[in-house]
Length: 71
Image (cartoon, rainbow, N blue to C red; front, side, top):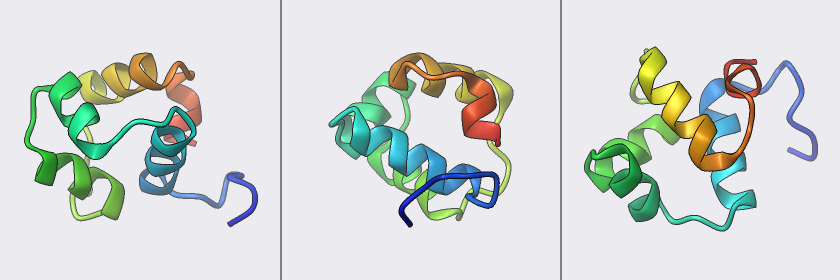
């Protein structure tokens, strides 16, 4: 996927933002106070509903607008 437009899912945007910041899943997990497996499930789409607080924490971590992650 060359461009993350409105067709990209929240899960794809989380992964893209993480990799652009050069962060590992473990680093994201530690920042969110969750397990690495949970952080991976956010990216894979196995967790269908990501809470508002988590979206805000991710946007701070990735230095992006929450609206970007939400699409």
